[in-house]
Figure 1 (spheres, rainbow, N blue to C red):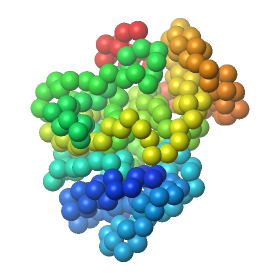
Figure 2 (cartoon, rainbow, N blue to C red):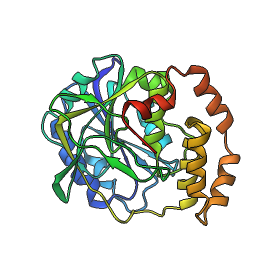
Figure 3 (cartoon, one colour):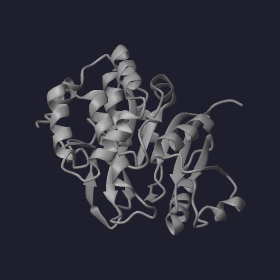
Figure 4 (spheres, rainbow, N blue to C red):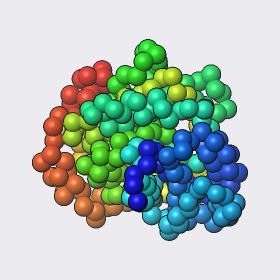
Length: 291
């Protein structure tokens, strides 16, 4: 089958009414040459049942493979030249896709994201983000710099558009990451090292539901594992030592480090180093990240 202009991949897990709201928001905004894919990663609440009679939406079911694998699978099933990953708790404006796709016409830009607005407080807006310190989960959202698209160090994976060729060239999200936490950050860092840029498109504003509680269980050992894996794959020794020192204080640290040692980190790190175009520290310098 011929490629399409746009594919939207929504990964969901026990999203209840949020998923319906998201699909109802997304579907009317899509161009004719597009598709909407939902990857249900093991929901037990029946939240995707309403889609069995919904024209124009394709549902794939996976069995708790995690956000990285679920997104990569969604991208492998998609046919669009632009692939958009969306959380299952967003609302989008009309014609959101055109400015993002336009930003991706620059071959140096692998991904473009909108301004992210808090669904409960829409006046709050973030324009990409950056690391605040060795607690990699503590990210600082960036303020708006100008109206036109511009480069940022990190984009939120809650809603982000990729060029298909960049996804394929880089291998997509790191499947060595486990469950929730820092999947987006690792991919953004890897894209930088492989010579790609990320752009925020301020004219597009997407509402995102920031939640205090997940609709599924989160084990913090895999989350800390993700922080350690990201750091060991990408950071220089002194910066890595700061991250390890921070997380070593957590009770789940020994279990997390055991998970790191049990996975394919060495091969992942060596592959990135062999293909590296830019060093990690250059990103910190370019965007004034100082810790």
